[in-house]
Length: 552
Image 1 (tube, rainbow, N blue to C red):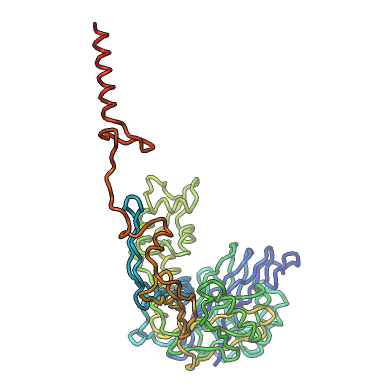
Image 2 (cartoon, one colour; image 1 turned 90 degrees about the vertical axis):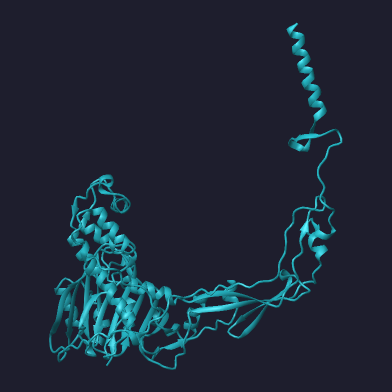
């Protein structure tokens, strides 16, 4: 079976886009909004079903809009995913380039140089050493064999939509009103959505028709908000199918000119695109370490070279054991002190979650003269006696919302990670003109393990005749050798010190103590001049004689 899942048609609740707003195909009303990027996590479950989590980034602003997603069968579950799932997988598998240093042999020791007049100062040298900078993921990996497997979710998808519109389900999930419906034609789907306040323009009918004709059903999610450029709340769908496909043909109506897409596949083996090419970039060149080339630019160029319809394997290997879940908070529902509640949430790791400010705004209204962010930060670091009492404070409501929108989604995503031992990360950036073919992804055991960490070893070639600073150096990258520089001149300790205005310690005069030819030196003053002890004694006797004469 096949699921078409991933990218969305986004529609506004207002009137159809006016040409002056240059919506670029996005169904915006009062302001332009364009899909700016997408990250998808597909999870192939042991029972042959698929869990799909989607995070969409957008740019622009509109009062409200909706998503429409075609799928092979009605989802058995629709829920909210955690942004932490996407953030942690991205951070653990992002392609990076690190350098390790290695020294072969022993170089001539750097000489000790001293001041040519005093015999003091200078620095001491030493032999060659080696250092390393491994970088990359070091947080461990998932052992899926030791993870408990959740019982399979099996749902009756029905006999499929017949004439007219069939509504399979409707619900409110987090900030979304959702409906799953099917029809024999896209015209019926669009008509139903428009009749129920989904302001879908007629232009979307032709885009949706191929999916309706293939018997797909449609998940519509409506969000009412007025937000600046950012990321929508991720969603999670559990669907009775074993294959993933991205409905990219829907995207041109709501996309930036070139859309970056990252797709993660959790399962037991690698995954590859079936009907798209696989782009390959040769990293065995020092250009990525010296800054003369940019890896992302070269990946995009490789995709273009393959006709613009290709994916690059950023990572394929064991699933990183990323931290997502946070401690339970149910025990905080009875906390009557706003400061104590916020401090407890901070101590349990919730302060950094991007949803916390929104939830606080619902259940803890700051005093009239306080900015929300300043007030909450004050409570986290002080108390209500100093910061003021909130106008509205509903601790039970806040804790329940934190559980439903943060704690439970994070735990579900943590379980998702733990039960899958292999992860594939694919990347593409598609121009609008290339969004003509829906990519299908299938397991492909021939995909080799691919590390996200690319390492170059910088080797210093030491020998006893040269200083380390003059030693030859080369890169070693994926078994290839690249010369950095050739060996410099032979070591000359005297010349080395002279070039620094110093002399070899063995050639310097012995240190001598300072002295004065005019008598004992009492002290030194600015400019290095000295005051004679005899002069001071004579001056003192003169003062004594003058005082004696004055008394007479």
